[in-house]
Each structure stands twice: as C-alpha cells, then as structure tokens.
Amino acid sequence: MPQAIAAIMNAEAATITEVTYQPILGKDKKPVIDSKTGKPKTKKITKNYGEWNTKSASPASSARGMTQFLDGSWIDNALTSGTRLNDKVKEKGWLTTSTVKDKKGNEKQVPAFKLADGKLVTATKGRPLVRVLSSRPYITGRATASDANVQALLDMRFDAECAIDAAVDYGTINLKGLKDAGYDLSKLNDGERAKIVYLCHHLGLADAKGFIQKTIGEDRAKTLLVTQVGNSSAEKYAKDAGGTYVEGHRVWLNTFENNRIILTKFMCDPSKAPTVRELTVITDPIKK
Image 1 (cartoon, one colour):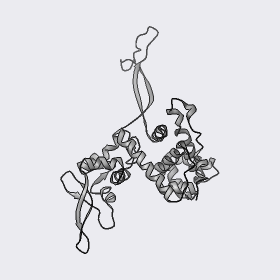
Image 2 (cartoon, rainbow, N blue to C red; image 1 turned 180 degrees about the vertical axis):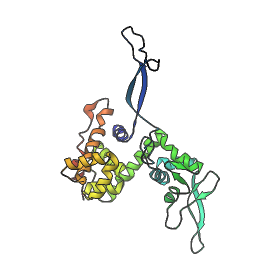
Image 3 (tube, one colour; image 1 turned 180 degrees about the horizontal axis):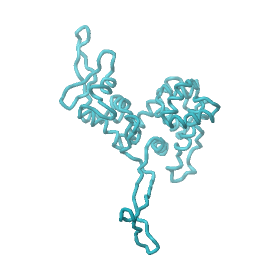
Image 4 (cartoon, rainbow, N blue to C red; image 1 turned 60 degrees about the vertical axis):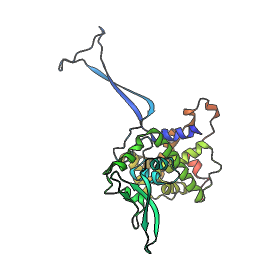
C-alpha cells in the first residue's frame, strides 16, 4: 500500500521546521523597542507542517536524505542489480563493465564504476566493488568523495524520488532476505510488513534477525540504544525495563515504530486501514 510506504518514510525522514521572528507589539500596537540595542524586540515563531526534509543530514554519521542511507549502504544499493538506483546510475554511464584477466589469463567482464576522469574502478582481491568505492581514496569523509561522480552518486540521496525508491527497494531486498532465511511473513498485512521493513532499514538485516530471535546481546543492545537516545536516556530505558539494555532497546524501538508507522495518518478513509499490531507482537510469531 502507498500508505505503508509513506509510513516507513515518516519514521525515517526529518521534517522541515520553519523559523521566523516577529516583532513584539505593545498596547499601542507598535513594536516594543529594546532599551539596550535600540532595536525592536522579537519573538521566535517555530512552525512544522510535517513536510519531509530532502536535505536532512545526520550530525553524527554519513546518513543523508529523507531515508538516511549511510554512504556505504547507498553505494551498495546503487550497485545492486534490479534496483531503481542501479538503473539510474547505469543511465548516467557511471556503472559499466571492465575486461580483466583471471589467474589463467582468461578474460572476463566485471562490474566497474567510471570516475570523472574516465578511470574504471573494479573490485580487488578480497574486496568487492562496494567496499572499494566506500573507502579511501574515493570516500574522504562523511558524505564526502574525492571524485565528482562518486560525490554526485552520494548526493542523489537528496533527491526525493531516489530516496523513496531506494527505501522501497532496500525494504524488498530485506523482506526477501528474511523469507530466504526461513521467516514466515505471509500472515502479515501491509502495515505490519511496513514495521518489519523499517526494522531492517533501521538495524540492518543481521541485527533485525537478532531482534526477531531475541539474540541481541547486552553490549550490542547498549550500543544500539545509546546511538539512538544518548547515554543518560539509554540508561533510563534499561532501568525502567528491568535493568537490561536488551529490554530497554526493545521497548524503545517498539514504542518508536508504534508511534511512527501509522497508516491512517496518510489515508483519506482511515476506516479502511488494516489493524496493525505492535512490533514485538508481530515478531514473536515469525521467529524460527
């Protein structure tokens, strides 16, 4: 359902906050003058209409755009055959092939990324192409590349259509990954599938499996929770959840998804929305 996709976006995307300053008026309806500066006093007016911010950027990582893909995850999506981003990168001529020789001298075609100077970058021994492009000398900092084509690829995260398409493709890939691993998602409706999609988007497929199986350890749970809410809040979540970061993290993520993955917010007729259960209620029956 389109509304399920919108709900996933709403859980990840930052929204635009509009800040203006209005003069403070006195009883005479004239601006009140600050005696120290001689200028009219103003009050700060903050408005947020819920519009997703295509230019959002994390101050703590390389996550960028409405769906907050990290540099490496975005490049991986672009290099994955069948994704919409992959099609667009091919159309631009950045993703092509190169002829290389194996140990026996036989020639074969391998995926290659074309840099701005025309040089082709391919995988190296023990390092797939995504890892090569996601590290130095091509990535020089958070969301910063040394090559114009790699930089342009990273900046495609700020394009709304690309961000949404990539989120959907990544979600589809993760749902298939769960299914192939033996998880039964057949009884979930679209709203519940949206929660599983976001679980995988937020944690990555490996940790999502750990969340479902309840195998995430205390140290990993603490790292995940602190990353999201900070040390003091993470400690409080753990304390309130029985003293463990494992339960604290589960409570936080369950509450977050239940408050953000809401299909009715995007429906003209909310009565047609499927009943969407809580995340932790959904994950228990699909455990292997």
